[in-house]
Image (cartoon, rainbow, N blue to C red):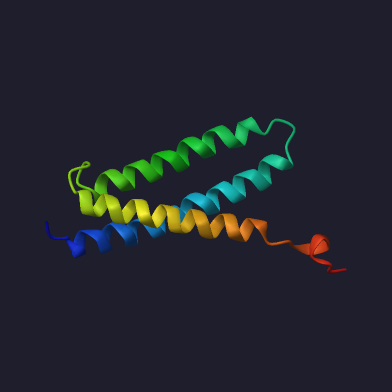
Length: 100
């Protein structure tokens, strides 16, 4: 079995881009929702849009799910960005970090 590196790199590059957009959208929608009395009015459409974008891009880059190597790269990219986003979310900011 040979690895199709072009497909892996294409999947990874697309996955990085789409995953960054996914988590930036999540952060923005949560910040906005925290200021509202009815947060579901922001969170539900945001989730639908972000999930749709993630799945559509994955479908396109993997040729409808037929390119396993592109899928592997796309999936790896999502988890790399997810890991980075969760690390960044744990970094204390503002008053919690001891800044006045």
